[in-house]
Length: 439
Image 1 (tube, rainbow, N blue to C red):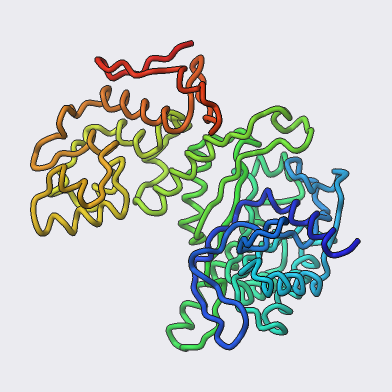
Image 2 (image 1 turned 90 degrees about the vertical axis):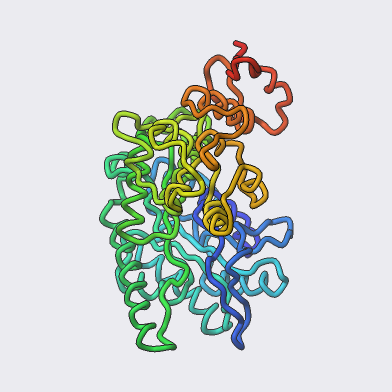
């Protein structure tokens, strides 16, 4: 099998791993080749030759594990391939010199055992860093169960290290991926966190102290393969951020690839809208000061498909609204639907100069489509707007449904970009401002 046949197999096998985004760091060439850019490191390399910045590939799709949800599970009859460290390093440099890529995302199936696989991946990265002097962005997946020493070596060579948590609970892990364990997944996460803290401490003392995974660590979990609630998933994400200082938790809607009695039916549609809501809630955890227990609860444990999580929270806490934009603290402005981090900062800066009205908010770039139902300016509401939960909910659901999905027979589904007839399923009664659904 030649190298490009391997490439076709192993780039295709890597497409289900979503845990790679912008690098988050900037680094010049410094006398070497390649740079790492804080923005612009994209998701994958395209086989048709388009210049997409990150070569996203598995080292091998041979695997000793038989995870029920994975296309590369041991029992599947799929084409298999494996690079040697030299082959993948040469390929990466070859693509870099052609200006196809700026960096590398490397993951792997488990060949023989976790330590053996990690040693091969480390050998590849060493060739890139030490022999070729490649200074571009590299994101590597640590293999659960690998030794602490190998994880530390990997972290010293790459920009980001991540460990896939795979499923939201230990019970689901035992059911669908019995050869993996919670302990083997969390141990490398702790090693990475400890390595980063040690590196930060040494950077204070020594200017040229070696860095350890400077772009942080991330993880990925599959949504919809098991029956955990959105609240359970969100609370787990929060715990991972708190304990391991993760940069990102990625959510991957379960795509039926295998026939297995423990999995949802093969014709099950990927829960893309649910994935979207989880990402929106994750944003609230990371940038808006929310906690999982505020967004959902044990009793109300699933997201409302008709509303984004911030709107849903606001409607359930109308006793906190309306917010007076001229006097409200920054933290409360962040909780107003439609006002983001940039908008809140602009409001705080602008109101030092003059009292703001609704025209002023528009001039500084605050979008009032959602916010108008939750704010006042100089004690007054927007024209024709009443601060009322039912009225606000009807209008917000109407806007959300129009923008994101269609409603038929009480079911919410994502709208196709090419489904021109779907808008006819419902209309807005202009007198009551309520959405009417034709079924």
